[in-house]
Length: 83
Image 1: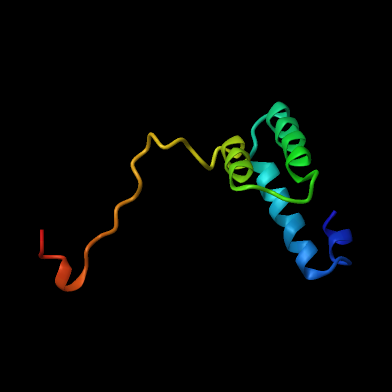
Image 2: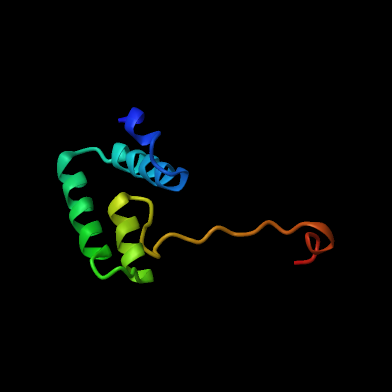
């Protein structure tokens, strides 16, 4: 497969490699099938909403619900001592 990818434009090469990495992180054929089916549906009209991206990310296991606390920023400089 890598041999054929070399003949594509650089941008398409990078997209295919990203897709391969994402696909490789999924653990079961069922997860892969579900993700591909949703991706096809998501991209059918050529537009992707924020909600669709979020759902796609949750299917990948990289986005979780809002029950987790957002990361906090560390205070630095003169504001670090003010509380």
